[in-house]
Image (cartoon, rainbow, N blue to C red):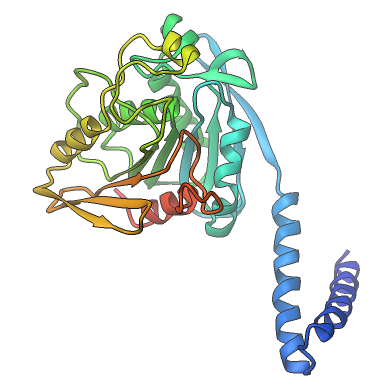
Length: 317
């Protein structure tokens, strides 16, 4: 097998050298250096796509729950854990792909749980005021995530000081709840296009938090209220609080003295907590819609997955 790999790399290198020669990189040093970089990237990409995503199940409160797991470093003595929560009507397969490249590059255990729904392709979370079946069935999703973390600690080499949760939309709403109730266990959290609801409990501890929201989000509008999207409005049992609500809630919970504002570009403004017990950052995307922000999207100009991991890796309990 090793010999075959060597032959494959050698063949790839010869082909690339020929191509680069036609592009003007005629010297051996120029063409060889660029070729080695490209071949290394190809090898890493092949390994990335060969690493399996494992589907697992867990019994919680007499209900079978499922999750997907990606472990790029199975021999690690200790590794960070990132739990990624999909949006309402989404699924774990969609969410795990958003962080898979980051997990591969930085060696953290990535887990994407599945919400309650009619199939494995569509799920929702009970975040207190939304959404759908999970609220109607009074599913305890906070307990699910707590039990999931306990299971992962038992079966994998988890660094307990580096447990992170990120959520999109309805998953972001649940992330807020988890941050409120599990703050002493979480190193940091991130919410994309999420919302809080009226009269939340007092957070048990300061928690480093990163929030991202687009001003053109019509699903979970910046101004709060009932969604203008019909099926989302039907899934709500409470109005969304305006985006300023979680910002002010976590300013108080994280004991920040004030908020500073930085215009990073025409499309991105960052608010940052100053003098805080735990970091607070909010990115406002001037043309952002209700989608996972990516640097390739001209309306976003930020890559949420990269930004979130960059924030996470700076924090531990």
